[in-house]
Image (cartoon, rainbow, N blue to C red):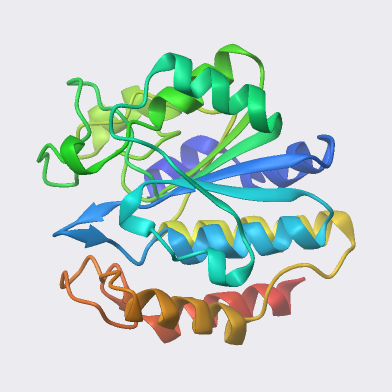
Length: 258
């Protein structure tokens, strides 16, 4: 991800946080959930949870938008969730935007439509049958001027369309074509989400970034509900092959920095 981070330039996470804080404190739609081997992976939902909790503490109203793979993951934390159908269309997206009237849309590790016209994983396999087409929601929102933020770690996630040409040239992956206003690239998407939360706390001057302990509890809960570590495709307290404690150390380090 160093190639993408360098292309984004200095301060790109701070700029995303400042743009979000400049919006009205209304509803923020947060999408996540990436299909891996029959389940959603553990990269994405903890980051989305952390962003939702941070925004809630700042006076926003977070709403998760995902599909059935993440059913029941967020509601126990008091975060409402909307489950998109696999045949989600343009009219459905417009109705969702009209009904919820968001001030911003954020994607955390969510597969996007790629340059070959399908929803593909890191190996180039088509996972569209298990992936609600939420790229359509972001594209509809962008056309209508909504602020959009994308967080990813590979090049095939919603938002990575902002660096499509670079991804095609430098990375061995079919890039997502859905762009965003502010892109955050990270080693794992959860870590990028944690960094956004830290930037929101620093920029706002308000204590809002959840602790490593609380985030670890949520990650553990997702595992009990069947989410899998993408490195092994099994339910375990790990993310993208990293032990869960590594992500928690990232949070502790971020807290120390701010």
